[in-house]
Length: 64
Picture (cartoon, rainbow, N blue to C red):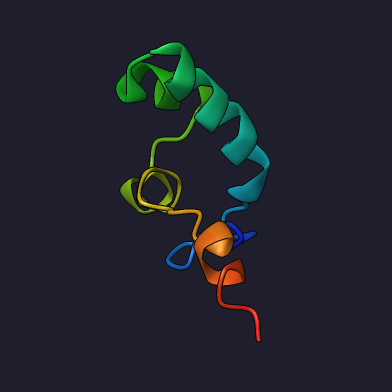
């Protein structure tokens, strides 16, 4: 699934942070430090970034 553009709870735009967030996670940085660096303080926005699962590749296998 595509990352939602805005947080479901507060409406803050979160999609702009997703690529940088994933790149920093792959480098091995701590999630807590990434959020502080990006200025993401709300729990709801943190949830949107940390709990998102890219499933489009799995779904495309079953294309009719």
